Image 1 (tube, rainbow over the protein chains, first blue to last red):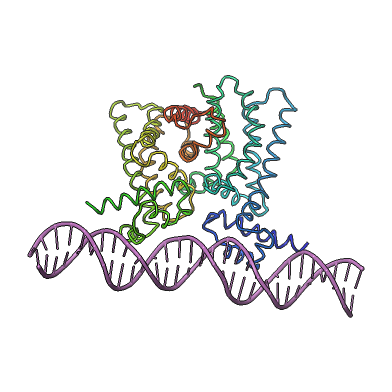
Image 2: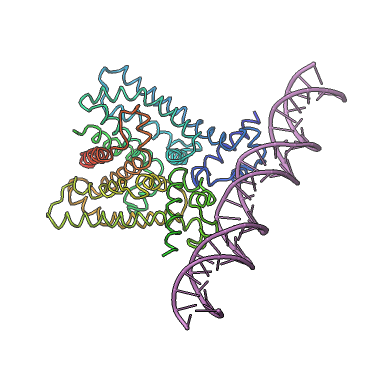
Length: 208
Length: 208
DNA sequence: ATTAGATTCAAACATTCGTTTGATTCAATA
DNA sequence: TATTGAATCAAACGAATGTTTGAATCTAAT
């Protein structure tokens, strides 16, 4: 299909530019300049810039969260008591795999995602909240089961901290590379996730 | 001084609007509308919108980081071995006090600060990096001394996670309130900080 | 009272933005 | 081949943006 070609071309260009300079700071003319398509094509295929951003997010986010839920369900099918680390891996692992995907997107998209979490735009927040809510609805009971001693209020707060650590790591892993003088390697996604899981597991288990 | 009145009025208005809708989504005309001053006054006193944002950030950030460093130095003067929790409190405590400051700003500013951390604008990143670097330069050795068993690479990663959890909590504590159905109180800053310190301390102490 | 500098003001500037338009091209069907 | 609907194109639209201008106003020292 020719339309999908143009559509995907626009999505790819928008994804990279949105991730690098932020959606607000990226004009449609920059997008079509990179995609080498006509300006009107964006509105023909997506309707508006905002709708384009939603499509950019949904393209990766929907499968990502589906994979998260599938992993959690598989773990629960395998054993009655799922360890905290397994849950965290189901939550963080798919993001890891996405970031190493040789296809376009990868870390660029994760940076964009991390940014959108603190983006003020309402429509985008609704989209993200819907996705986050669907994931949280399934993961929250799993966390509660794995951490029966942690009061619900504390658990909610800690999951909030978790989201922050995750989003910031997604969005700005490169900065740590510069900051540490090359000591930390932001391309070592495997090690990054492992360290993040260790950190989060300890924080979640802490006694109040 | 009359100039300071106008200057401060603009700073206050910009701070609130920048925090609520984000710097990019806030126009100077919205700022001067709230401040009830002339549009040209912004450029007369600050030179540009970007410079205004820098002033908004610096006004709170510079004293905040100065207080952090002072608290750390005081703790080190008092005892040779400063506990991890004391260090964390020196890092997080001033932000807590700022957020409860009855003066204008408070939580609004913290939300803005959290947002700017993931903002793509280069000039602002430079300002933040300068501030963060100054703080990190003093806190990093303190953390190392308090956590001698944690390898430096892991410690750097964990401090990166820490920044993420902190920034996200600053920026979006209200969202947790809605999300938890009122179970978590985002106005209970004291409890919030306490929980954050507990979470972070456990994560930082974890065995690799 | 006059002067000089600092501050405020209304108005316009040039640019950029997202969006729309209407003609044109293309692909596939009948 | 003729026709139809989808897809692309150059061009323009109106609105909003940050910034500049130059005159008016205020303040305080001479």
